Length: 513
Image (cartoon, rainbow, N blue to C red):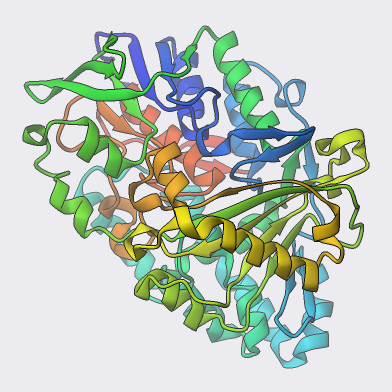
């Protein structure tokens, strides 16, 4: 592994899934880890709300690549199944188009009959697309997701492979090469939205999500994503790690370009020469570190950066059940590209919208009182805080608009059977999660903000400072943040020597060194 740093103490800022995964890896490697969390519970954006007996996951609900989580337990000589149960979700998503027609997106063998029903001429194109996606997955996920990009030369080494895989195409452009029907293009290109990317802007490497789902399916944790968070937290503390809640960081202390520890808002100093930030990189650098130590990560860099969209999330519980609803439903609006242009580029809030409706009680009825009611959340992509929208005024009218839409189109009788509801807007993301511009997914995953171009897992400016989570390499989404923890902790354990990386194969990690 190379020469180890003298200190065996690590401070992690934030207990999101990336922070917890990094803590487990460092604790397993023999370090003494303290996680400082500003909220009253662990999980970060994956925290939980309990309202009148209803359990609501605040953030991520789609679990792909479960082997990444299993690996955390295996490294600690534990069995994941002793801590949390993952349940399969079928279909993966139901896509509902504006004209009311549907597509139940699942494993390819189940997709093909539906393609035949909508556009028979696209069946062969779909099969060719699946073949084209496989090498993208093998390079983009199995290799690059676990490779540290600490120098520009490391980016140049993979550039030929990326060009060969046509990464210069957008994700939508890649799908359109094989699929001609516009509805089907929407079905097979929406995935980047789940990690904060515009399908018309992000590189086609993100089409690997299709293959990831094909190989490993879609899962949901029994008890909600919060059960997975609790499992990771329990594992971390069993290994000897410490979590301190209600501990907001006011400053990362740096001397002579070296980390010395962190100071909390209540003026408590935690010394350490290794600090891992699970906070938004833009917030970490511009709000927690004196500018004189930030030549590469200046305020200017993060002002010029392009950020993902914002999110409005409405959580609600009903006393009526809707057995015809699927666990995951993508509700498409009347526009696709035009709406995304308004959200990502024009930063305007329009009358029309698309959304993701989550019904976890379809898989786990115990998330609602007595197992007889229904728990929901609906997520709507909206512009980030650059829009200037006054969400303090807009939140309640927007919530009423969305709930009325659901009542009239998808959940009849909703308003009469509504028991509890809660809304989060980009303003809440900004306040609760220190998310720059109130984004849902940190920096937008365009090519010029990916791999080496993304904020590095190992700080270029400050010795001993590392990043983990959605804003660093490889990016957002549960597989991304767990992979980032592996990249980051490998860099620490190798004492900054980024020449070694590992690849995920058949659910296990094999050294490429």
